[in-house]
Length: 95
Length: 339
Image 1 (spheres, each protein chain N blue to C red):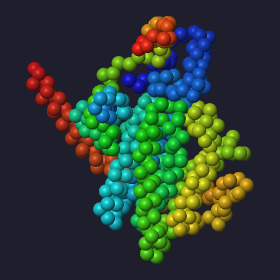
Image 2: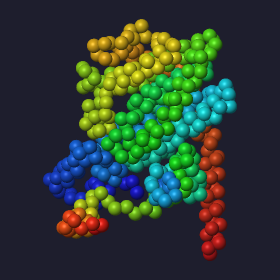
Image 3: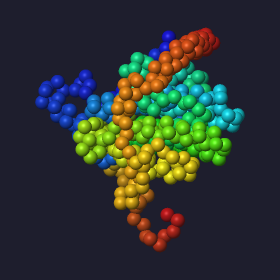
Image 4: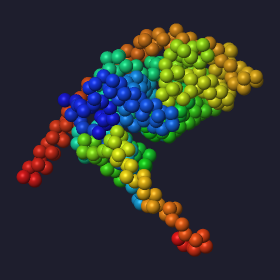
């Protein structure tokens, strides 16, 4: 038996309280518990984190780069979602 | 989730002319990203040459980190103090970590780590030739940190801007950790340089043996007339490589000579002298025959390094099997509890 049977996990690390978990990399492990322990040794040797998530890579559903235009375009023509779109008198404060 | 899904699929056109258009579109997409100095990510379409070059380079880099644990590992049980031992252990553990970051990066290109390790064990993929030299004295542990890691950093810093995202990200992590390696190596040597005559002689001997192999780490000449020979031009166009081997080697020499002077040692090159006109240190001819000889397997430690690696892999098999068996048992119990 070899690593062939060890699934790939994606590792997310929260650097400190108040911040999001951020993708740090991936690793192989026989199960999620071992993935967590290996992630501790691999990605937080210098106190880079206070919390770790591991997710089986196979369980991630991702958007595809070849539909990036059709997928993200709907947001492109809605500039009115940004505060700078609006004309207001310059001498009005706190807007 | 790393499969390339921006590329020919079942529903891709079968008509030859359309296929050509399709291929062209993929090429334009890739070249566009490269031209704007953007990053290529795992699921982007990429030319096969780009993919294969990266797999080879990242695998070789990962293997170097893993094999690179051995020369220093040799001194773990004989480090001169508990402090030095703890430091060396942390450093060797870092090298293992660097290997794993890099294998992960390679896997995003569609290869398995297992497959890469098999190739290393079978001698079908290389690792840096520098690790085929022996660590004869404690000063060698220092020389590796100072010269080998110093040269590695010089090579690796530009790779943090490599066009392939996962490789660049791995290198950022590696470079952050590598600077401790270089400083601890210099500290070992600095301590020896302040010691007895025997310690100073040990330091000088280590520098004599590691200087030239460290210069070879940058690879064969690839600028001037030699520019057309190798892969440098293509790799620079692809944004995999940012500087020529020769440029990096010169930078390394310029950085290292003043450090050697500080250590009070002589570097083993009679042609080494400051060139006012160029604003760089001139250095002598590198023995490329030795480089190719060691690369092709005839270095002092080639056979030993691979044998040690294969033995570690085989003797560790039961641990991997036990981990899988335990994972299966836990999963079974959890299912039983649910049912």
